[in-house]
Length: 291
Length: 277
Image 1: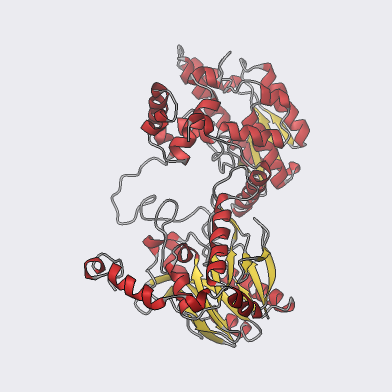
Image 2: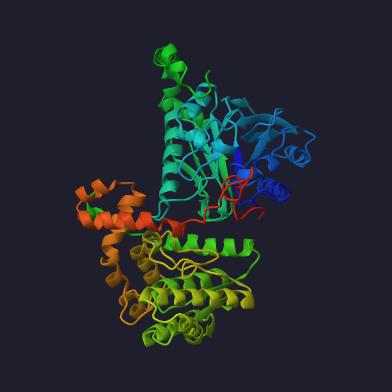
């Protein structure tokens, strides 16, 4: 059993110090509430629409960084997943997520799909991540993705094949699509895909979405956890900050997969063979990363 | 989707929650706790006032009536109803003397220019009251009028923040009804009240009901003009609306700056207004 706290916070745009303090407060509250893992939203240390602020808030994921140091200290009490702008040694900036535990960086994920269309402009300011890896934690093998990453079916699929039984998603998705329903269309879309992944992968899927406004864009929150049966475990409130607790009973994985052995029956060799055919030599040159 | 199948119903409770949150957030982050709203007696400004009062508390909202000599007496009374109902701070400042003084300098003006002068003098009053009261000017322009360009640039279109600009007029009316705008205001014909007998629908030549459904298909659903004709809208109507939207785009964007340097405001000096807050 893991007690996970979904910290759907608002952020101050470009004010890393203020956001750090909010994280430390949230971590302390999550600890007091009995959580052993707290998850923050996408770009939780910086705010979302950074534009020309991107280079000024970027930092390396290193232990002596003055922002990460107190967070690493706090991770001795409970594990932490948060969002930040990462700079590499050559000054490329990534929209990244860091998983901290026992005073160490356990994993850093760099967003691989940067939405650059409509109201989104991430590809203009960020470099594209190019790894999708599951990672081992003291609770089991996890995977993490950032917002647009999970709108593509392949990243969650790859994490599943790489052994992740708990998928931790983080988002900063602007709310849109007001109609006669009680929630925004965008909130319904995101819940649908989260529920679908939980069902298809018989895995836990948590998504933490931020709240608050940046100019006219409002973020709706409504963080969720779905269990390996595809059932909703918790849902945070919409349009309000909250720390929502969820109990993840990992034994459910065994029960769900006994009932529905999708993982056992997954034909990875067939996938590999067909992907090799589909992405044959003619196609390779057109791919963005040229891999 | 055919013309008659377009549904513009909104969940008013959700709209209320988002818009009051927006007003609270964007006012306080700009360093203010208060707001100023010009009340015309119509439904748009009535709703803006009610939303602002709910978001910031009525004592933190100043509603200003700005009648001109030819304004309809109903407009004045209906604005008064909203002042009473919300309990906001109230102010009445006539724009007759200021407008007449200006117009006397350049007589024989056509109606539209006279109307624009009135709208811009009202903007001056609101921004002056904004300084006096220490509150942000709340915009009252809706999505329909913004798209059609049925506004006076730097007049009624001027504001610090606009909670209503993504609601079509017919959607705005739903929210206004749900938030208690009196029936007498909801029922009357919309008007800028810049000259006697003016109505929006009379001047535009079509109803909000019709044009909102067309704009929804064109803008929100990204349908081509041709597809809108196929959906059942009259071709001439579609062409006229498409042209209004295009021609008035200048009112929706900041004036273009001629680029000379390596870093220019608007092109490659990019920050949100909420920068640092």
